[in-house]
Length: 107
Image (cartoon, one colour):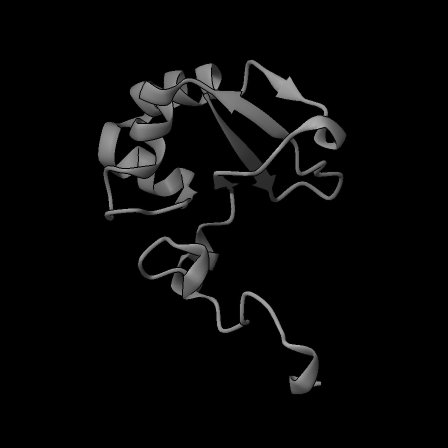
């Protein structure tokens, strides 16, 4: 099982985290780019079509988790935010310019 955070365009978005079975995680994240951990619904629709993408999303969002009790987030799914794809050309968190960590001497 993998944990996937969903970020949507709603003003009241909760940034919920869901437990996703391995097969659905692979369908969400490992079809577009090797090792990707970012996915956009628009990519899923392009890849699978609306019906299959919709079924995948329903399955992937069945098991909402308590964020205070999870260990790790394995992927991020953006819903209705396709315009942000330009910031993630390889669909990886590492596409962002921000460093993963900062040493005290860098401050």
